[in-house]
Length: 326
Length: 247
Image (cartoon, rainbow over all chains, first blue to last red; front, side):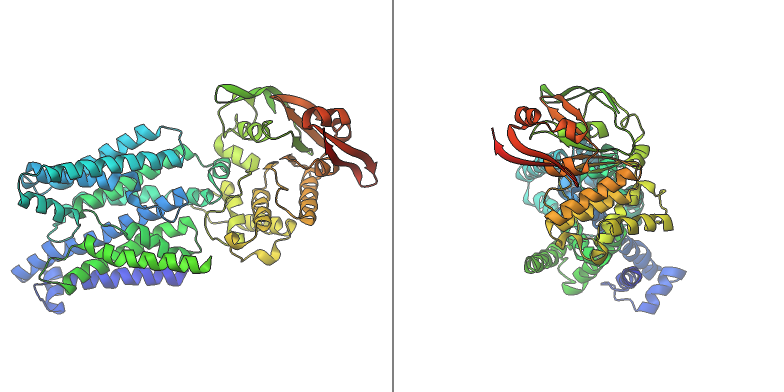
C-alpha cells in the first residue's frame, strides 16, 4: 500500500515537471527553470509563469477533481459504472459556458465564461436537491441527475441549433471538447478554492462510504446519516466538477476509469480509493495534457478528445478482464 | 422496548399499537407468515422507517444507537471485493473516533467475531467471491464485531447449510446467555423452538402470541397463524417442532 502512495506521488511530481518543461516555445530545461524561479529573462518568464505553470497546476487540480469525484460517486452508489457527470453538474456547467459564449458575455471578461459555468453548476445542484428531496435514497438522486443532464444536454443543443453563424457554433463545439490551453493564473485562483473545498468535504466522508459497502440499511444502523451523506456528496462533487468544467470544459472518462483501475490496488476500500483516485486523476490528466502537446503540436488537439480516445478502449479492456474473471 | 408502536406502509398500517419489552439475556425469535411485519417491526424500531409511537432505540442519538444495537438486514449486500477481515472490521466503525485508527480492542473484537463464526481460514479471502452461505456468516461476524448489547438479525439462518444453521443459532443463543439481547426473525419453527428463549408471533398487524417456545407453538396457533399441522414433542435436546402438512 505504501508503494502505491509513493508511486502515485512520484508520478504526479515527475509529470508536473514534464508539463512545465514541454511546450511549443522550445525552451531548454535549465533555461525554463531559471526563468520560472528567478524571473531573469522577460519572454521566457512570461511563458513559464503565465502559460505553462497555470496549465500544469490546472491539470493537477482538474484531474484530482474528476478522479476524487468519480471515486465518491462510485462509493456512494456502490456501482463501478458511476461517474461524476451522473448528477448533471458537468452538463449544466457546460450549458452555462455555452450560453456565455453564445451571448458574447464570455468576451467581456476573462472570468465571464467560468463564472457562467459555475452558475450553471449551482443551478443544477439546486434543481437536483429539490427534485431528490431531503430523505430519498440513491435512486432518486440518480433519476434527478439523469433528468438534469438530459435537460442541460437538450438546451446546449438548442443553443447550437440557434447559433447565428458557423463560427459561433464551432467556438462552442471546440470549448466543449475540453482543453487546458491558454489558461491563466486567474483560472487557477478561481477553480482552486472550489476544488480544494469540495475535495475536503468528500475525503471526510470516507468511512461512511466504507459503511455503505454493507448497503444503505446496514450503514444507517451503524450511525451513518444517509441524508447528510447525500448532501455532502452532491455539494462536494458539484463544487469540484463544476469548477473543473468551468476552467477546462468537459473532460470525460477520467472520473470513470481512474477509480476502476486503482480499486484492486487499494483492496477495494472506498475510503482509501478516494485519495488514491485524486492522485490517479492528476496523473492521467497531466499525461493526456502532455500528450496533446507532443502528438499533434500544430493542430490544437483537445484534451477531452484524447482522454475519451484513451479512456474508452481502456474501459473496454477492464470490462473484458472483469468478464474473464466471472 | 416498544410502546403504542405502529408502522404504516402506504395508506394502511402494517403494525398497529405494538407493545413489546425485551430485556438482556433473552434470545427472541420473531415469527410470522410472509408479510406479517417481522422486518417492518425491526426496521421501525431501529428508526430506519417512519413510525408512530415510542421505541427506546430511536430515542437514542444516531451515534449512541450504533453502539447499542447491531442490525443485520435480510439483503446480504457486499458491494466491493474487500477481504473478509476488512468487511468484518466495518463493524468497528461506530466505535472509532473520527480519523482514529483501529485500536487493539477493535482488533480483539474482530478476532473474536471471526473465531465465533469459524471464519479463521477465510480471513484474507475476497468476500464477494465466497458462496452465499459463507457471505452470510461473514456478515453475521460483522454484526458480532460491533459488540453491541442488542443484536437484531433478519432471517440469519436463511441460505445456510444444516450444520451452519445449528452453529449460528448456537452462537446467537450463547450471545444471549452471555447477557446480550438477541432478536432474530425466523421462518424455521424447529430452530426457533430449539434455540430461542422466547418467541413473539406477529399476525394481522399485532402480536398473536408471546412467551416461552413450548407455550407459544401450540397446534391451535400453528393452524390459525401459519395454516399448518406440526408434530410437536419434547426431547432431551429441547422442544421439537416439525411441520408435517398444510391445512
